[in-house]
Length: 114
Image (cartoon, rainbow, N blue to C red; front, top):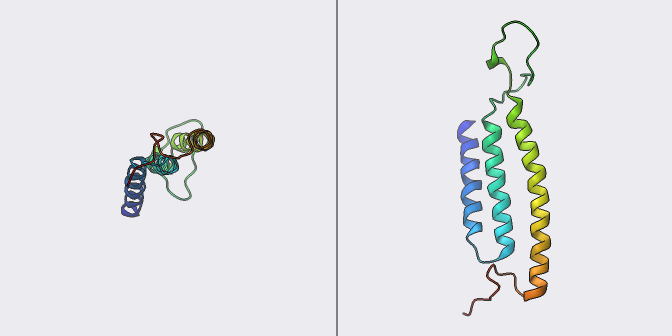
């Protein structure tokens, strides 16, 4: 399972970086989304996730922390998803406004001459 998860994180990260280097604004936005998904999966995988383990330890006495999931990465990923959604919406509005003002969706505002 770890190999599949690490391969998914690697594919998402490399695809996101490749799209970030593209000349069109929409591709840059999609690249940022893919990169944020890769980072979210990485943070989420650091939380010792296992099925059937509760995220909160009971009060009192000695408890073995390996029997519980870490709730902090889950909370961080949920917060990152909300922030990513808001910034993606903002980027799309800026893209539409930029395209309306310049007539192109290239990052530098100029079409390539071929």
